[in-house]
Amino acid sequence: MINLAAPSNFSRLEQIYSDSFESNGSYFPPDLEEDEGTEESLADLAKAPNHDVFEIWDTETLIGGAVTSVDPNGHGTLERLFIDPISHGKGLGHQSWIDIENWYPYVTQWTLRTPTC
Image (spheres, rainbow, N blue to C red):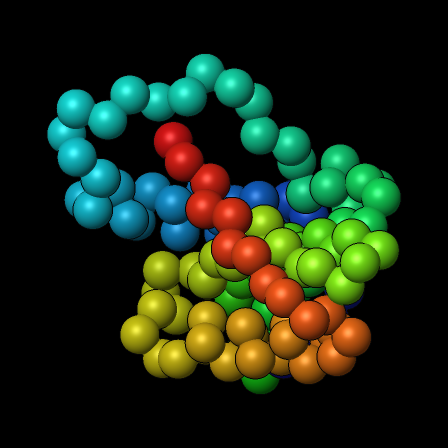
């Protein structure tokens, strides 16, 4: 289940995001150079125009989050989608994506933005 994120959960969501990114480290090439740019916090993104920050729940456990942006022309971007590594492999990311699409029935096209190191 997804909901708009409560500011009181931003800190936990940032930790889940970090954990999920780190858990995928083995998929990156060993010579990958990290980008020195800074990534906006979830609190900053929640204040950004046309952006929504979601929290993802499995029953009563906060297991992940997502960030979307939608422009006035009905084009949506999935900026981030992250699930706690302990909840991987259960189809929760896929279900969350379906829930996000249903949240925005007026969006006619989606783009996936994949943050890099």
